[in-house]
Amino acid sequence: MVRNATFEPVCTETDQVALAAMAREIWFEYWPATLGEAQTAYMVDQFQSLEAIQRDMADHGYEYWFVCAADDGRRVGYTGGHVEPETGRFFISKIYLMREERGKHFASAVIAMYEELCRTRGLDAMYLTVNKGNELGIRAYRGQGFTVIDAVETDIGHGFIMDDYIMEKRVG
Image (cartoon, one colour):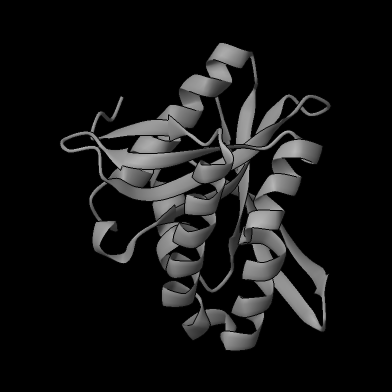
């Protein structure tokens, strides 16, 4: 198991506020080049804002964690998702790292954390969606043992489409 990271559960409203601020910073740094400013702003509002985080936790069973560097505890990113009891899988909704922390194997630590979570909870697999234009992400997930199982175009409103691959990793 990768040990360069620890995971701090997001539990309080203060944590949720900090998470939303981090999400906004990461999204506006990374996504406008791929999605454009307008879609990035819309998606932050709909899926990464304080209201969205609180809604997902309260209504959809989402769990969130800050990804922290093991050496000094600094927050380097965040991750979250939820169990799908009907499919026996964990949906990884979010894995995002601060710009200066990418390439330091923190994403590998996140995947290792989810593998352990799936084993502990008796889940068969984990899956995620990745933008078809996110070549860095696709390569990283393939390197962690994920395979593409489907491709989807999802209308998220206001004329915006998410054009994604669904990638899955079986946990055995």
